[in-house]
Amino acid sequence: MTTHIQNKNSSSPRLRVAIFGGSGYGGSELLRILLFHPNAEIVLVTANEHAGKPVGAVHRNLLGLTDLIFAAAPDDLSGLDDVDVVFFALPHGQALDLAPQLPPNVKAIDLSGDFRIDDAEVFKRFYKLDHAGDVQGSFVYGLTETNRDAIRTARFIANPGCFATATLLALAPAVSSGLLTGKIIVDAKTGSSGSGAKAAANTHHPQRMNSFYAYKPFEHQHLPEIEQHLRIVGEFSGGLVFMTHSLPVSRGIFASCYMETTVNITNEDLDNLYREFYADAFFVRHVEGSPDINWVKNTNFCDIATHSNGKQIVVFSAVDNLVKGAAGQAVQNMNLMFGLDEKTGLVFTGGNP
Image (cartoon, rainbow, N blue to C red; front, side):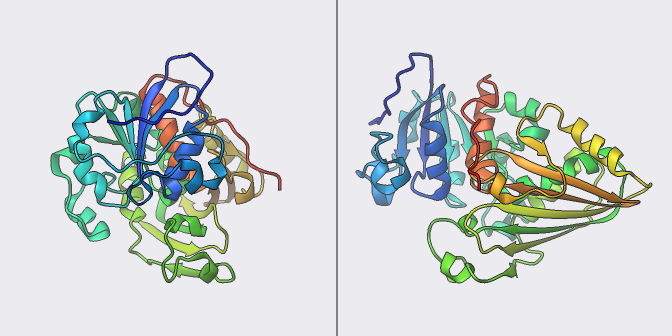
């Protein structure tokens, strides 16, 4: 295997990292984060259509920061036995074939939806793909703040979807409390980068920049993922209405989550419930009033605000869909898998404004 190693001055031990699919937005963010991670060394980054090109020539924000060259994906993954961890930042369906080929000593984190859904029929309905069978059971769901213990000992991680991350972090404390009754309604909105780097009719930014619309009613692929994990977090009946919308911005997800409780709950009690649940979660910030996607863009933070009106509560959450909703959370999970502080390489701020 040909390796391409970025220059670093530190002599501390580093994890040898491979990224499959480095030309898309998720791969670009993995590169941006891992190039400055004190315990990571990128030894391979693939992008078949850009093979042979310098990373900085494709991702101009990384120009002058690395001497990495994009490579074609190897046909035989047995040569990756000197790699510690592989990130799959590929379109849905590709990691299904690649993950089983990895040498047994190599860990993997998949950023696609290939291994998030346990039920084979549900997976086929939402992804139009056949389930991975036994391999599927080897993957641990990587919502870091709710699944740390399982992530620490996992070999394979199914990184959550961006909508799922924003929604589950907003819902998990309320669902785990056992106080909810009736349906949960989630109104979630995303920027255009969530549709990937290649333009399509309704996802290309010029089509979206002065527009606003809903899409995939009752059919969004993150819906079964959210329902599946809520049943693990607490008592959840499956009464979820999940609706997604297109925002005329490039980055960010904002989720408004509406719930009803069995008893009256004050703003103070609701606030305390969420603060206690996330007491050890550095990347979940409780804010007053409302989150703002501007304050989480380019960061690994999820900002949450809670409000109650007797038995009615609303929780707002905001994340960067490409960082906390994808690459940042993947690196956070890598840190846990290898015994590092989960904040390592991820403490950076967004811009202002």
